[in-house]
Image (cartoon, rainbow, N blue to C red):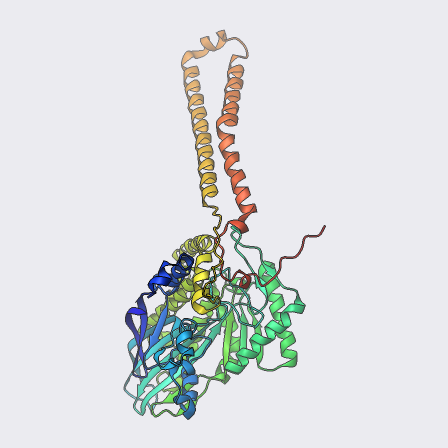
Length: 573
């Protein structure tokens, strides 16, 4: 049950709440059963807003699973209006559907509120200025951003990649930007929707301690049914689909890009509704050339304008409908994707304001409304961070550009920190998080009396700590030897200079060379006895850990088969 919540936004006169505290209520019998202990821990984590349940939202009188366009269509259906919210909800984003299943099956649907996992934030107090003869004076408005995470193939960054056999993809998120403007003729609601999702192919990157896990891609003959199911589903939901692929077109990512392009070409040869655009973000934009995104926009502007956006008047009349959706992806569908989605959202907002007579067609959001532009950037950066934290464990990389419009050295340092944090979480924490998500979303269904498939997992932390300590000891001893040798040489040089030529002439030939040789031999013996052993031990342990990394990471145990969608090819004998 939800014990605490805060108001995050208000839409259609209904308050939207973010969950801030929850409690799992269990019977004494269930609590006492040892086999339930692991599942209860996962359940508590899965609904805990401080844990894997971060980003849960609900409303009493507004269905958050529906876009404004879908909600308007249902409001025109009298039979749908007679159904409880749980029956009208979009099942893709009904996050608590599995948890509420016993209540729903018992006919208690009217007692169930659909929750979403994602993000909700609203800009209130927006003041716009009429810029046309039909719209004059100040116009009050709100701008709300909603992200809905799909329950299908939900999970964490490396344990959920690509698509499953049904065409569901990992990290599928629908983002809706809603503008409500109180114009002289009454309130007008405008909505623009985009989606993101993993490359819709069978491919995996299972954690194995390495910074970049091994990527496996299924052969082409297995990809067609999966790709087709995914695209047909999108076309059914959104009509037209513009798939923008931001991954590198060469190197490791290039193989995925090539496979995606081939499937898109195959699909388009026999079906309509899909347009595929490849844009190598790293090559075109680099570290600080983000203005080159304009080159991509010129390729897709026609699609955005022809598909338009959804709009309805205060009386409920629909004046526009969005006729297609932009589907953006990179490898994680986080960092590069966030940058592009923010750019497209700004363009959509500008189109909306121009159509409402609140922006001159030749102007732009930054020029006409600089304060709103700054708030808009922060809003979309917060959205990107929330979506990223749920999937990868950290806020989005490149979020500095989304917040400020500039790529800075501070942003590059922040990206480095997030990259290291992701490495740790993805290898040593995400298995448990994946199990929590699988339990909450119903990917794993606990059977009464059945023992959960929990096993004790090996951890690489102990050998890693020993290896790092050993390497540190070896390096420190080597530094001490080098420092001692330099001090000895300096003292010898000083002593020799003070004795003068007389002592130098009386010295037996070859004495200095013998001493030098003896000193070098001593250093080598010290290196062999005190430096090499800990260094070799540490490096050997590191090699052993990385060689067996896939056995030492924190793995999900409830549904491991959902992660390994591609079989590892057999070794050739």
